[in-house]
Image (tube, rainbow, N blue to C red; front, side, top):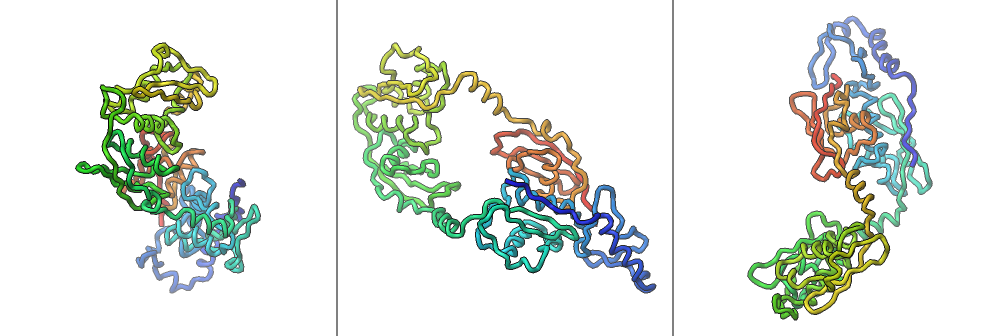
Length: 432
């Protein structure tokens, strides 16, 4: 995808100086004596430096309503939320559909900005307000940021009908319409995993990782609920079940062998939605005994007693890299054959382990002085961080602003798979 481009029209410094010169030439004696009004209703001492003077590293805003806004920093911020940073969660360039007006695009950009920043942003031409997006590639929108122009390129524009259909398909399904068979029959054990296995047998394709099981401690029933992160289901449904029967083994006669085999098949990987499937978790050189131990780690103590290798001679047998390798185990008096998924190369697995080691943030963000920023907020600090550290994964970070000083703690968030620890960064804020 092409990166957004912007066109810099004229020198920022010279543009900033124009209103200052005009004020000097056109003012009257009375106007010169009258103290200038400050934002918020105060008055400025005429002895203080003129509005047009700049601190090192700043550029004029070119707009009297938002003269305290650093235009360059604001353009960087808009570029960031638009999509120049591919890691940025709220990038906009791919969020539009055929028929959206350019005014609605501008409104969406403005929704990410502060009230003062919004005053500086408008369409480059009023004639573009009702212009609509089509489906052709490389469409662009031109906006004005202060006195400067910025050109943004759209990503993929969704087909209007497809977008409507997507909206319909993303409507959550009520669980009582999905799980219509609420009597699950006999299960081997009253626990969440066994209930999930029974649910999957009753409803093919059920997304188990979107559900929470609340077991009733007194009766043989459970509430099946859509969990907080579910994007598919909503609501809840109550299911019932009965206790266990003999399993063909005196040590575990209360275990239902058929239900236990179903459970092992489920955690092994017959259910592609099951988070803890095992079939792809082994590497070259693992022994069949270690595979059995990993299966047993998912079972109760009584269930473990029913499970062993079909042949004792297989204990020291090792996995190779060939396809379609299988392991045979005994579940009670019955045999169960399980096929491995992809077996990892031992060296590659070791390298993967090394590459997944998290990076300390103080080693990643070595430039901790970010310079001057337009505004003291998380998004502006993120934009400054991205300018300092190319490729930084912003969605893996949390920004804690210091309310008293111009600094912030940048932390690896709880879900980060890349970073760990924290680092403190400092900055200056453009003076009003």
